[in-house]
Length: 239
Length: 239
Image (cartoon, rainbow over all chains, first blue to last red; front, side):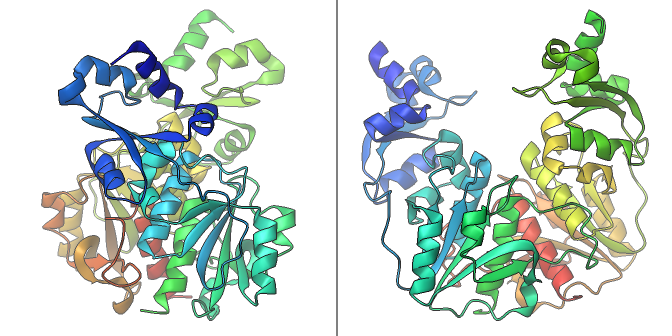
């Protein structure tokens, strides 16, 4: 391994170098195996037994270097302007925490969503912390960046529904959910919630009731947690 | 502010110094206000306008120092060996991720759980990252450390139920949940799930069905997400 190679791999922890190279880093035996089995193109795999402990420690982002690390090519359909015609989708309106984004992709995978759209100000999905937190869901879930207000307007125009959770929304459990031919669930930013521009396109405002009703204690739920409770409710009706 | 004072505050990022002093650090205007309004004893509050920007930057764990930081005394009922007689509780069996623990306390707060018990190998609840992730729920939720297998055995002996999620459990949505006078929901470790010793005390094995059934994509859900979906289901029946 050359010094330049090491330098290049380390540079991929920064978004600008992922953008210019079109590559991202995947670490860990299991995640590398999932990358190899996926539709993604794996450019190179480094294994500890081949390059040695010391070299692996230099390229690994982990405190205890993983046995395998791969350079994977980002898909070329990342940006999406087309409006889907059927399915249940998530639209992420400015998720900033890498752990939250990874966890949300895992939720989308578990509950079989048809895709996840993220606003341009959402944290980069190829950030190493996001990749790790997806536990491999990144290789299975259809993920795109899109302008969320445009997406939502397009969905409404195609007679789809746009759902979002708000503190003044309707009780989630009292709604007939999960049977729309086309629907998007908007998930707001951790601190600010759903942006005003996106909120204007929400057709159905939902609320996850606390217990006892009217006494939530905390002001809100974590963004990934709210996603999970909402998505589970959409799928629950179909089981 | 003396150099020793700064050194002491910074030392509280380490568990051993929190243990020896009985104090932990709370940062941010909102969290400090919640600490002051809570049953916790606030020993000292430092405000940026009083100690200055430079001193605040030295004691703050954040990249942009918060306007307020407080030293708060840990409650003295942290360790618990008594078995509760009624209520719905969580029992955390080795949660290691600070963000997960904080998010779980926020869930417990939102859904009005009667308390949270954590095994001794759970991450320290006064770790600054946990405190931050609770968004203030740490000041409202009854939190204790306890030996989880002993707790579960005691709950069974008191005719309570012990629930846990397992890949071979029963469909969560097909069970009559939420009406037990006394119940504990066990949440397993992020990587290993529920320990064998604790699993032996689980009376009701649950499973969160993926969609479509039988095709989860991902192998599991994040621990906090599984907690949220399960707890929401217990409360949903009562609304």
